[in-house]
Image (cartoon, rainbow, N blue to C red; front, side):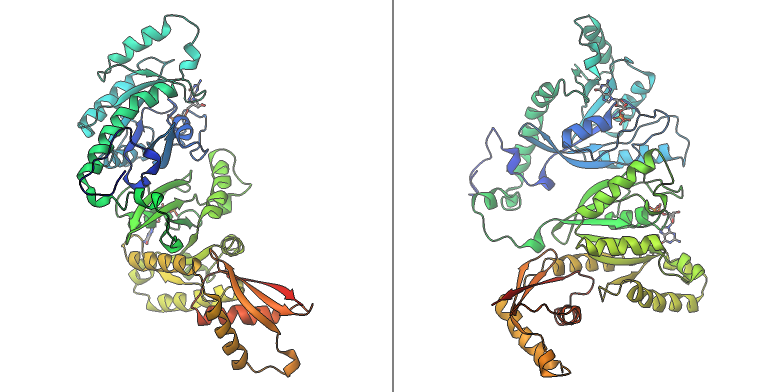
Length: 501
Ligand code: GDP
Ligand code: GDP
């Protein structure tokens, strides 16, 4: 594909070369338990969405987003929450339906899943009605799931097809999310539709030549790591306001928020743009206090949340200001563990003290002041190994501090990606050594050479003369000096040593 403005994008389109943010979006809709999560998992080829077999307990409440890979086809897939039409206002299910309608407006394609074993269920008719109302521009593809159970040569499939036609969306396709049956048919159905959409989109948006990533692939240049997508995890105990913060960051209702403890049962992943950079948000369930206490969906979430923490580049640990004011403790044991784990894993850490409005609301300026003074002091005491961890005081509910949070996250990421040239580092080393007064000359560390071997997080090697190891105090001194001089607060930098003879 050429970048000249006169060229057209041609069939067959290579979807694998198109940047994810430009790909078309397909949402999987259907009543609960038809296999939406199972299909989503198959399409993203990962066990990211939970599938939990309890029909009355809707595990799939949030909307998950992932990159679908179906042969060479790529698209963004959304796993919608179970739709329920008898929802009473204010209930989880009602909000789910509202959220889904919001997301539908940003979706180009819909896959309407039904359970072939149940035939057309009254709730399927409701879903169809709902789709016509909320997404009149989208003609859904009806997919009959669980068809592996019918593959015995009987007429059942023909009957199921004619029944599914009564939904009024044309011929259905037969699939099995669990066994992979019918994925070729799904591919053949989707490819022409997605290709038409994408060709039209690319031809209408010629300014996106560069940003669709096609040219970069042909012409690889030095990658600026700080411009790569940022993976942000928002972690914290249940009810500290993680979902509210996430919504504030996204400035749209994309994630469920509510007072029910543990509402965000599953980890969900959303993508958005901030100042030209793609940010993958990994929301994690408030899992810390549940370890070992619960069975069922919540304990499944724990495993996923740990994994998400490890996948993140920057972790925003959310604390509750009201709790801090009440208990006079900034962090519970579990929160300290999380902060330490984050740093041990080499991730950037940002502390977000939420619900500050509750302290201002009481016109209790002494508690505001106390909290703002106590938190940095206590964090310094409980996590002495990393100095200068950024701390933000916000109110997610009142949308105060959103920009500060994003700015701090982006800044932490930039520092996490920092690469310092060797010449500069050695100039710095000489200065640091001369600045510091050693007890006696013999105690001065004999570092011949200092270099950065990797970024994300910044990792350095100090080459020492002879076989002597630098004492821990020297390593701490170097770490502290690097942090101060290169403004690396909250970044778990690492220094290794090697001896050169
Ligand atoms: P959702 O509520 O629509 O997201 O449905 P899930 O993906 O949670 O699936 C509900 C149940 O159906 C689970 O027990 C799955 O294992 C099962 N299931 C999903 N896809 C298939 C399939 O293709 N065949 C069969 N037999 N069961 C399936
Ligand atoms: P999560 O469990 O950490 O995701 O917490 P949620 O985002 O679901 O929030 C739990 C409760 O705290 C909800 O009732 C929110 O409305 C409330 N909440 C969240 N952020 C704030 C805030 O900044 N100020 C106040 N006053 N309440 C908040």
